[in-house]
Length: 145
Image (cartoon, rainbow, N blue to C red; front, side, top):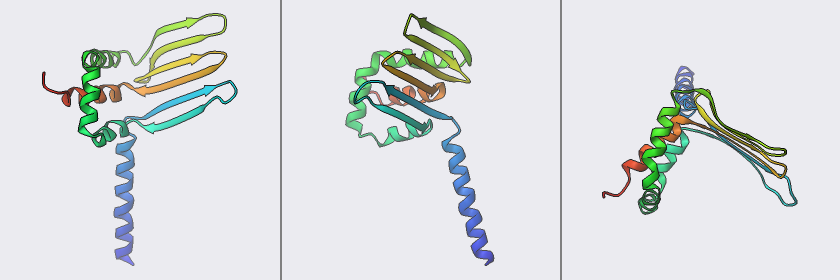
């Protein structure tokens, strides 16, 4: 009986540690609602740490192609993500007209993009550290120039 309790404690501790690691960066949230006939309603909540981990599963050929296409922008995106971390709660862009509203800001160390329009709503929340991790991995896997 004591052996079973020790095994359960070990498994429970491992699951708790794995869960804490997986959620340490927070969540990547994507919500898209289209208000038209046949419109899509997509709501994804993914642990942000899963994105850089999943990139290791991408075949090398496809990763080289992606890094080649994004090469010119990678260092810029990485620098912007690093600098935005200095402003954890700041509004950067807000556009409002009679029926549309677009807002880009950082909130609690995450990049938040909200688009509210009559025919669709799009809301994205992505930790800045995840953006930096992804661009770092892409730069590291870029083909030698």
